[in-house]
Amino acid sequence: MTIEVIRDRSRKMKHTVHVGRFSFAIDEPAANGGEDEGITPHDVYDSALGACKAMTVLWYAQRKAIPLEDITATVDRDDSEERRGTYRLRVTLKLGGPLSDAQRQELLNVAEKCPVHKLMTVATTEVHTELAPA
Image 1 (tube, rainbow, N blue to C red):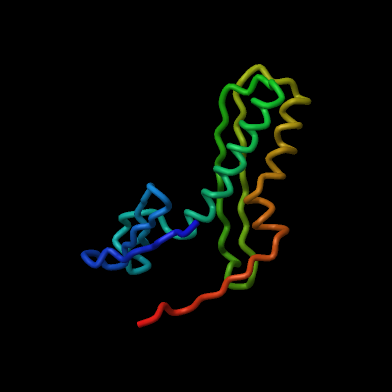
Image 2: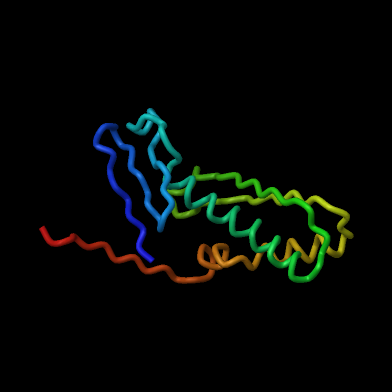
């Protein structure tokens, strides 16, 4: 799959991200030179983790017939030490439905195994950046 990020030349820093048939705006707040017309790249990264955990838990609950009725994942970012190499994300899951304590714990354990969590904490990600031909 190819993701394309295209500058919106009518704005200071805004870009549009195209993923298949979907698109969304990326920008920076005014304090960072943008116009706050979209989420930031960090927001995309952080929200990928929350979305993956929520969807993984829902998928698992449906597969195991666990009576999960609702799920909300809240992601809190602490980037105060990012430049020193530590980026902290805290995910809080709010689970709705007639769940036992054991089922709640089981779903929490499943959330720790979501694919994006693994990518962020276990996998080695290699990035190669190159220029397209002129």
